[in-house]
Amino acid sequence: MTPIQYCYEKIKVSKSNFTWAFYFINKDRRDALISLYAFCREIDDIVDNTIDLEVATTKINWWKIEIDRLFNATPQHPVTKSLSKSIQIFELNKAYFIEMLDGMEMDLKFNRYESFKQLQLYCYRVAGVVGILSAKILGFKNQGTLKYAHDLGIALQLTNIIRDVGEDARKNRIYIPLDELKQFNVSEDEILKFRENKNISNLLKHQIDRAETFYKSAYQKIPKEDINSQIPGLLMGKIYETLLLEIKRDRPEQSLNSKVILPPFRKILVILVCFFKNKFQALSN
Image 1 (cartoon, rainbow, N blue to C red):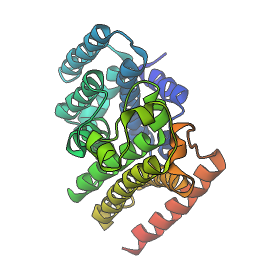
Image 2: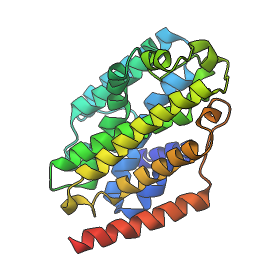
Image 3: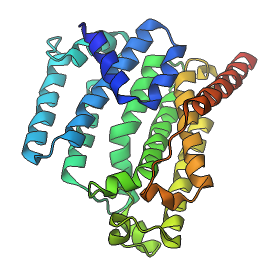
């Protein structure tokens, strides 16, 4: 199995929503994105699947060394071997990969966040950076596109947090800022025991409003000349934004006990509408 084949298999197993957008780009860019998201899956799996903190920390440190090897043209892992071509073609910065690993370390050190300021740093490291790297791979003319990518990455991660609030609670993780739990008169115990009530509904609506603000900010920031090249990212955004609206339309507190998933036909519909809308907008500029 070649390095890029390994990456495709890694993404295939994860059944990520992101792969839906990869069909709209050429092979070099698609391979680069697949390699990037395979890297994300590799380091995310450390947090999800490694129970022993010391072992997980050792694995993260190994990846930091591997990133050094990657940027010194001596990668060992199939994912970094696959990335080696991409970092040269698309000028991907080493610092961004270290930021992602720092984000994984935050997951190992913290299972609570005191404020949104703290949470936003986490979201930037695990998702905002991925958005920026993805935008670089897709190509852009205007630096404003990186600001769009940053905000879209934050929006996607906030959507994940809202969708997975119950799943995370089962791992004794609460990503919703503790000062906001206090603001809405919600105790940690209520979340950890999956109690659906009005206060939790209001708390989650507040999180949804924030995520919607980041989506709106991202779409406002994307320069018109880069809409066409960034369509795959816009497709990802619309899939996750639709997912967020589904949660909002139902009782948001149900996220404690069930996980909202868009069926394939809904994703296809969202993709087609978003694709042709943005293509038309790009052509009209």
